[in-house]
Amino acid sequence: MYKQTLLAAALAGLTSLPSQAEIDKSSSLEEMVVTAHRIPVQISRIGSSVSVLSAADIEAKGQLSAADLLRTLPGIAVSNTGGMGKQTTLRIRGEEGYRTVVYVDGVKISDPTGTQVGPRFAHLMTSEIERIEVLRGPQGMMYGADAGGVVNITTKRPTQALEGDVSAEYGRYDTRNLSANLRGKVESFDYSISASDVSTDGFNARDDDTVLADDDGYDNTSLNASLGWDATEALRFELDVRDVDSYNEYDGSFGSTDRASDYEQTTGLLRAIYEGENHTQQLSYSANKVDRQLYTDGLKTYVYEGTLDTVSYLGSFKLSEQNTLVLGVDDEKQRDKLNHTKQDQLGIYAEWQGQFTDQWSYSAGVRHDDNDAFGEHTTYRLTTAYVQSLSDGNYLKYKASYGTGFRAPSLYEQNYNANSVAKTVLTEETSEGFDVGVELHTASGHLFEVVYFNQEIDDAIDFDVVGYTGYMQEDGLSRSKGVELNSELVLNDHLSLLANATYNDTATSTGEQRARRPRQVFNVGLQAMMLSERLRVNADVRGSYNAIDNDGSKLDEYEVLNVSATYFVMPQMEVYVRGENVMNADYQEVNHYNTSKAALYGGVRYRF
Image 1 (cartoon, rainbow, N blue to C red):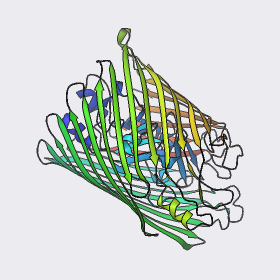
Image 2 (tube, helix red, strand yellow):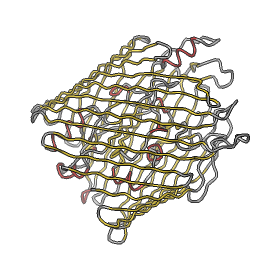
Image 3 (cartoon, rainbow, N blue to C red):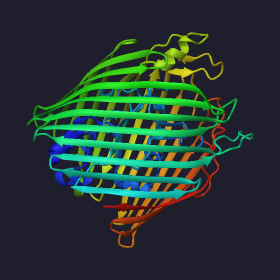
Image 4 (cartoon, helix red, strand yellow):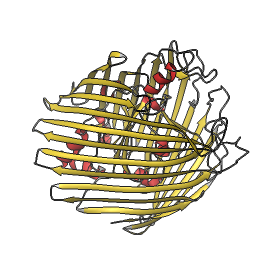
């Protein structure tokens, strides 16, 4: 049953993963990761850089926003423009958020109506999330992504006949969060249903909004439903539907500051998975529809509607104990309903996963994309990992990866320039990068990791923020290079320490530092269990240094401390409290945009 669950999850492209308890029970080796190769691979055989947030990690930190969870991982920095629901950009290794692909239960959640086609992290809440995997560095070969990487999010899935949870939370800025999850299995069927409703009055988003000086609130209702059917021992069908409906108040950069937006994203995925003795086949169709409306002084000013539909095939063929061949096809169709424009792209890829020896693993892959507006492009990826056994059950893992990617100009970028004065004709961006690293794993559960990365974008597309003439193409290379340090220390049975730091040296094609990319970022987290494990305490401190804004001015350097505690009143019921920015740091991640002051939140959760 485990084999079927894991393979079905993996070969859905990026879909539901079994719980870590199931993995540990079924594998005597170690944790399995899906995102790196789109099928389950032991982490000791993965040459790419991967980070994982488990269900326990997510609950311990208690954050409402997925972006706030992800910013605790190495190589990631986030900039926010004024609180919950406001524009939030997540950069992996210094690359823009739209150069990162995000999947939720196998669906690519990029917004086809955006200025660039990328994920809207501001509207991604955490109550339904069970696991997050982050793949850093260029991943164009396997996913068609650009230099940023891949974020794979898995929602909660059933492990027994009936289970679920309900929770309620209240805190500063009149913030309320209600959520419920119901999961179960009935004979050959399994299902999962979740709902959450988040609302906050927020705070004044901009420091120069002195006329209205009003709070900028946010509302988000997220619904998710999944249904699975094991038609036979070998054949499984799955259906996933997700809807996010939000309303956001925000302050503009100029003109009227009384602005708001409606945003709704509806996604669906239908897939069939067939598992043979030494192969698996999966065919899926995903649909992604976004509707956006913008308001100024209460009047509707812009209406956007776009779709992103994909038909995919993924096959995995185990040719021997050491060698596996992965084949895939992605046929993606993007539509801009406002401007009646479209862009189609067909991608075909293959990856060979093998072992030179039991200790030395490698992968080699190639992808060919045919974009109807920007022609044909071929991207590659090579990875390798070597495990050196040490004494007493400890081991070192040496790893390296190299990859390339490309990004076609978005429909918005093309339409904007076509109607601008300059009428600049854009071409595709290309990227390449590599990383090398070493990990030390100890029998007592410690992890030490150091990674050097170096990646660059050729002909990067940026907006002219000076003359507002449209989107421009940089002539030359923009780059990000640096070092990631990561450690996980199990101090005793009840206390653990997690720490990471990233040094990122970025430069535009003219040699200037890239905007809103901190040169140094660190995270330190402490997790403790007390009172016979009925009380769990989590503390995280985050620091950011040496960043500039778009106009070249220096951004604030800061440290922020978050603390949370959970007490289990009974095995099924817990009460929790969370303090954010408890030292009341005064800082801005984007000039003129405020951040939250010290805030306290409390809630209760019941499981059944």
